[in-house]
Image 1 (cartoon, one colour):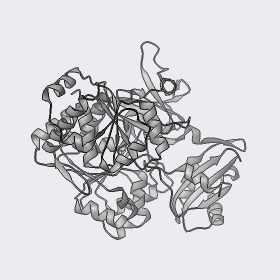
Image 2: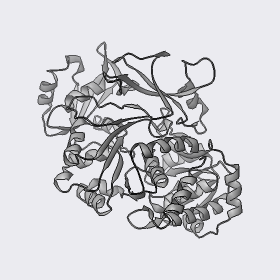
Image 3: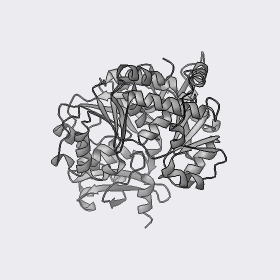
Image 4: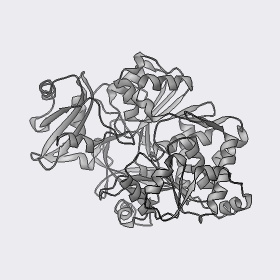
Length: 501
């Protein structure tokens, strides 16, 4: 295979009348998805050349997925724009892309008109009513290569501007071809999509479903504020597979959702994005003891994930959950500077090479060169690797364990400290639901934010039994619930704003 459209075409041939994707309001079969995408692709191809970025400003749903696959038929690559994001951020992305075409729908047309976009704005309604041009589509496919871009997801940039991670067909094909059989995803599965389409967790949902012939159920975002309604949705739609951000899983356990209902069809629970609190993992395992649980690790720059750990044993609160072993065809190394780390319990930066690597950052060669670098262990021929900025180590079972971000490793009172170690000790306290520690560099102090009905003095008393004084946070903030980013991770920026009130 050299194009992800082959996933769709194969499933449309095998399961033409099976539901491919559904949202709260509509659904479509594999044959309908293919037919609509070909019409959209024909229309888009008439407005742009191949290998061009096509931003899509729409709410997540069946219609947006149709547009994505239409863009791919046109030989271009899609960029999801979330209409709920600030206009400034959307504008920054458009300025970086310098695209000639923007696709939106009637619902978001007013927002699209407010943007400073010099290119042509195409409407989803107009595109879906177009006629298929088989000759034009064939010509675009004939010119395609597996290293062509498939999508670009924008992540936060240290300069204040978002960075666009460009991922090719080959990277997704190599990853999904391993991911689907490894975790037993088949045409019998119903995948419950939680992640936004501009977040790479959704790539696993979309392309696993297309490859396996599984049904993709797009869960309305609003339901994640109402666990009872969310659990009703999982049960009513007979969802079997959850590939979710850690925070999404924690919402159900934090609000004691399982006391209302246990989703009886769920058989696979895969999570990523942050460290899974053992307390919450054990609650999931208590109520769904027969499900497959998998800890996935990897940044956007390496196409979703580079390591996995299938959880087969019990973990006590305070123990470290490994991120496991590399996926096939991905080389994962721990480096201390340019030196390979092989000893157990010695820390190194997690670095990755292989076809899973993204092509780089769109229209940003300077940032690309900083982290997509020559493997220092190979001086014989070019071999790019990605420096993740994450620290890890091998445990006693030779499994890779995530330690912390390099930028979460701080120097405080003359001591080198891992904020993750402090969080782990606070998490052991029964009354703690979730915790996040941040280092305030300006005032040189450690801040702890926590959910849970417990007094600060009691937390200090308990953690002082296991942590030295210099690791005890200087300030504690109790929050009703952790603020989350659009990607479902704890929003540290908002937490810091709490300290300024």
